[in-house]
Amino acid sequence: MFGLHLSTQSHRLFVCVPLFTAFFWFATLLAMLLTWIISGRPQYVSQEGQVAYISDIGASFLKPLFVVSCCITGIGFMLSLMFERLLRHRGRLHPSMRKRERVFEILAILGSFIGMWGLIFLSGFDTKHYSTAHRFFLLIFALGVILSVIFTVLEYSWLAHNHPDVTKLRRAYLVKAVIGSILIVLAIAFGITLYYAPNVGGVIEWIIGFGYTFYLLTFAYDLRMAKITQQKQECYYKNTSGCSHKVPIRLWKNTACSISRYLYK
Image 1 (cartoon, rainbow, N blue to C red):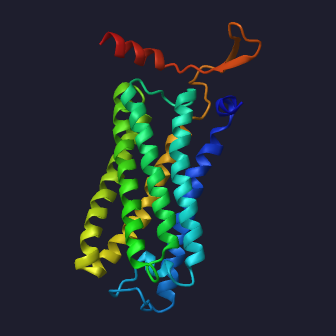
Image 2: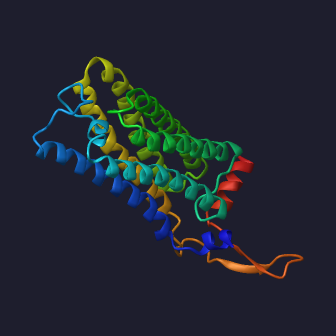
Image 3: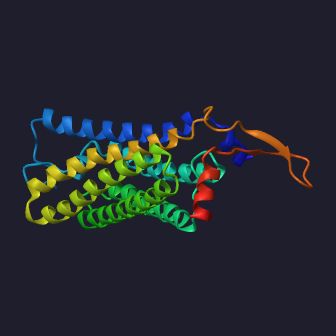
């Protein structure tokens, strides 16, 4: 029943997950930043430099908002990857042609799972009362997201290679690669400046935070490709051998061509 629902459900439901996640994350960061600026840029107890970190503001009276936002963002990030995997398996998205793409998908989901728990725990163990634990979970979150980004980009590079006639896949791969690379470089720079240049580290952290929004939005673009259009053959039903129920089958026009290129190249 769940598989049938995935085959017939409108793509808008899946697209809403990364859209809502990105919107809530961006709105939370904007509210926290504006609160700090409008309040006269106060010096928080946990703050080391002149620029307040996200975690410094998140440890103040805005902690409930920060915790809720981190929970929604972590779960939404993982669900976006899981929906991609399920829809690709059901034929709503361009299928994986080799085992390595499926392995990359699973590893990307695993990375998002690690990142999700790191984000949730770092929001609960705030930097004001649990400085060591907070930085530990911040590291876990960063590692989880970085691994997820790397494996997702690798997966899309092979998907774009296996489906060279689908420009949307290549576009999705390039956008993910560019945004992911920038975020990884900034994360490394943040890890260095966190200890040696707190003010620079604070600025970089805010850039990473807002930049993460754009990475989340790339999944909305990906899931939008699950839209049922006339370019796909209509979903039809046929009786399976030995079964009284009917099973939905969805065929992509370019899948046969991709398989032929793979088998006979």
